[in-house]
Image (tube, rainbow, N blue to C red; front, side, top):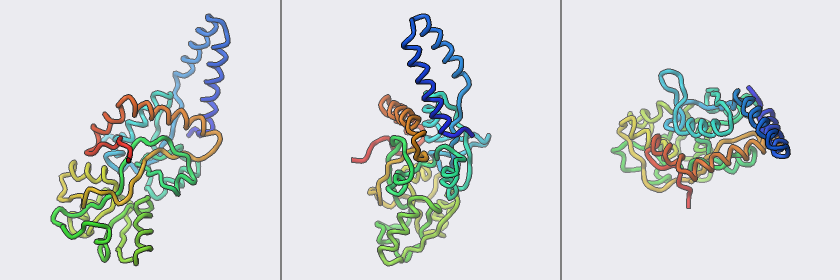
Length: 278
């Protein structure tokens, strides 16, 4: 795995070479440009960590290939910057530990840019916007607010921001919600469908897409978000990463402005994920 320190160095080196070319004569500039293009034929690698099981943003197909909204966004950015995307899959609860240890360069799992995470990591510009909702059985008309979860069994993804949100709400409101953490979200929707869970807290765009795509007898409890989030790609905070992250974010902004993010959202999600919160 190439560290982002090396990636940033290479990015700075490329910029320096281009500046030298601009200062030389026309023939020299053409020669340098050709040499730079030849050298860039071999792409650098950006290592991305993920659970691999959070459709429609990230999942793995029958051939073991990553697919989803996050995947295509990263591929577009990587192509523009000259980086190959390499995937490392692990349980979500251990992903940020891998990032801290330098085993991966960033995380792709629809990562919410929470206050706690912003205090520790530098994030790219947002590439998605949504919020938390509750998934309940389609026949359940008794859960219409978070208050209605008291005494109910509610599933969460272990260690994610919604788990933390629900734990905090519980602490501040009597601790009556029965919080049930899961390592893998793939079966949790079926747990609600089978009546083993009263509800599952998830991102609304994920919930709407899964209910649609899997044909489950479930529904979203209401229109309002429990909490709003912007989503970005986190990087370890360091001086070396700043230059690379600026270029990375600039490419995401281009994808937003030219409509590519909207096209990818329409392809993968049941709800447009590209509309910023008001």
